[in-house]
Structures are given as structure tokens and as C-alpha cells.
Length: 245
Image 1 (cartoon, rainbow, N blue to C red):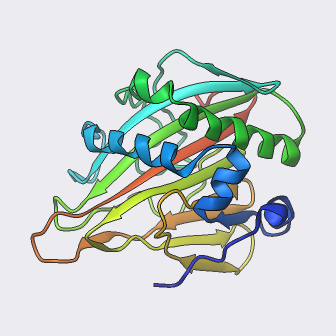
Image 2 (cartoon, rainbow, N blue to C red; image 1 turned 120 degrees about the vertical axis):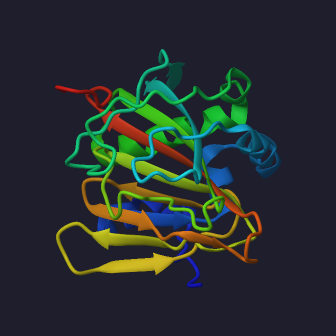
Image 3 (cartoon, rainbow, N blue to C red; image 1 turned 135 degrees about the horizontal axis):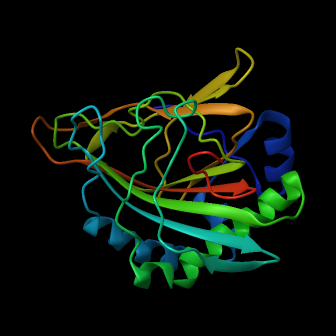
């Protein structure tokens, strides 16, 4: 497994501006978000209670998830009413064009200071990249498991999300191989591959400039259970993605 190309806190914005993505270790995430590792590890238990994703068009049973929507403006975080997750087919050829009503993130999770610290920090990053404005955000709790013998973190393949900023936090890995992260230039030949292994390390991406994917996971032992947990947070200016927008 290739180690991630880590970025220091003071180089986050220069790296995002120069290449469109940056990888941070957990200590840097905590320092920039103003939270503690113990607080993040505490909310990781919620990934054990995710319901199945019933919208997988490849017939798989390997994904569980919850979804939340929010707004951040002037340093204030506000929860948005529960809504469907929607993407156009241009960004998600497999699952785009349909309204997917996932179960909401639990209220007790959303209320945790550590949970709230992450989108507030990411909004500050987005402000620095694009200029201060209202940010419309979505948070996705994912568990990809090896129920089918193989789990696909990105069954749609290499893609963009149709937003401004994407953050992928590795919450944890258990008894798996694979799950390699790949980031490519949108309009060039450059790319990088690495494997996030440290809980609460993160990949931040300028969604207008790069595409990304994660490779399938397999169990370390034949027939043995394994999973990969992530938190994906996206920020978009101008409103939530929705049909006709």
C-alpha cells in the first residue's frame, strides 16, 4: 500500500490551490478543526448502526449509509430539513438522476461538538478558496463491507461530485485489503494513488479540478467479515443539488 502524501497545516491552502487536493493526518485535522481525537473516535461508534443503502443499482448489499444536510454562513452552522440526495447523471452515471432518500444521521450524532466542528472548518477552507458565501453542505456516513465477498466504495467509478469542496475522512478499516484512494487531474495526465489507514485522516479536494475513486475492498480472510468506514462531507455554493437546478 502506498502511503498518503501528507500536507502540513500551513500548506493546506497552497496545496489545494496548486494541485486541487491535499491529504491531512488526524492530528492536523484535529488542530485545524479545533477538536480532539477522542471526541472524533467517540462518534465513530455510530457507524455500527447504519442502515442498508437500498439504491445500489449493481445489485450489491455491501453499502450502509446515513445522510444529513446543513448550511454554513458567517461562521454559523444550521441544520437543513431532511432531504433527498440527488446528483445529475453527468456526475454519477450509475446513480444519478434519481432522488435517494437515505435515513438521516442520528440527532445525537449531529449534536456532537466534534461532528459540528468538521463542516465549520471546511466552510472556512471553502471561503479561503472561493470567497466567503453561504455553503450548502451534505454529510454522508458510509460503511462498505465484504458481505458479497467484495465491497465497492465508488461503484460509479472515477467521478466528480458536482460541488465545490469534497472531504473524505477515513473513520476506520477492519480486516480488509484494498480501498486504495486514487485522485486524477480533471484535464491532464497527472494522478496519485495511496491508501488512507489512520482513523480521521482526510483527503480534501477542489471538486472542479480533480476526479477521484476508491478501489474495491476484500476480506483479509476468505469469508471473514471486514469493512471500511468513511465520512464524506461536501460543500456547494448556490444551493443544494436538485433536479432542474
